[in-house]
Length: 305
Length: 331
Image (cartoon, rainbow over all chains, first blue to last red; front, side, top):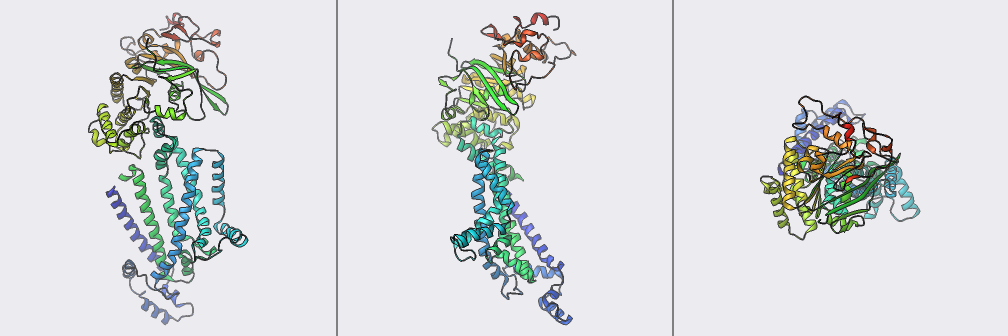
């Protein structure tokens, strides 16, 4: 198990390094950064001056190495637009995004997994039908529309919840539901399919033949095997939620990292975009790594992989 | 005459399907005494596995079970609730399955799975359960038993896994062991070992065993009694030696012709086959189910046919001698 973790960790670091290089070089593919920075009306000399000032005239690899070592120390440079250190800018915005993302995935898991399990135990029952309806509706409704509906009903008509902002925990209820509901259908369907599959397997019959009770059969013998693909899916969705809930953040005016990314791209704020891409990628890498470790713990056959 | 350990009378299993009810098992009777081995023989789909699952009450929810009697020792299994069945399963009656590769949970160690039944049914500590697991692994011929406990199923070969399954079924010293084609998925060399092991263990522990198989060679070696099933019905039952020496039902004789017998089957002579296929059991099934494949079938075969012969060796055929006289010149 320990060698497995170390191997995966090494792999994760390699991926992280590759991603950092790609995210850095992408910005050079998008055009001349100095020209973009100087604006359309700048003269050639001004662009040259900016190029020297920001060091764009040096070889790319040198720039990359410098950027990477600063990044490792937590220094992502200064935002061209906000004129603030990128690191503190992102850290501040990430608080909102991480709160939302964690609540969202938690909401999705807490609703989807039990619903999927019940649906699998009683296929074609009322609960199964309701679960199917919920997942189809969740997949079909655009997040922005569902968010607006919630605002109209619960904030404007009923006045129970604040429509926007991030001041208190009550501000996070509706965004959590919208974001979580987006991730729920896939998790639920996968849990249901996995449970149905596992409940028909021979080792479940063996457990019953041993005299194990239904609860024990379901939770000890079946769920552990059925949840493995769900873990991998949830990890990817979690990475997605922590990086890209731009729609939900916009609808509920939560100024999180997703919103910052959108702003920075629109304003050609290169250091911020670079740093955000790196941070978002790191989320994916970290969660994939954690999912691999969790899965290896759940299923011993994966430990040798 | 000692009291039987397991007694099944008129067991019937119906499976509702889209095109009507499938009469998978129709009126099976058998009984079994302590220490006895009953072999249920029949081809795929004859209902032999369903019969054993019905005794354990492990059938799928859609299958309807009815019977005049299913009694295990002093427990009436027909009226037994889930709780009672759970207390019996893995404790006084245990089961071994056909597929050793998939019958163990991939997520838990051999040790955990071995100890589970004992911990469920007996008030023992984990270390006591562990000691028992090691003892049984050694008994089923697994070397380095202690270290096997921490291994996972995927680290063991098929033969080893089936040995683990056997050890697992014996944890609580059951009175009845049901082995559903325990050797079918294994190499021929391993098959003989596992069979030998099962026979030795049933003798040693004075267990009754139901051995389900389609391999008549296996039956001949280990069974005290044989029940031959065809299309959900018993066609012949009796002491193994008698059934093999004097098979009375045309189907049993057909089955026996399918296996080479040393001394009887001439070298190079073609082995027998039974032409035709098993009839559909969906809808009303009447008369002898084997008549569509039987060389001696006549009009009377369409009627309901009772078992005949003496009580220890019965068969279900309209011919008093199972049409043996007609077959004389053929065989």
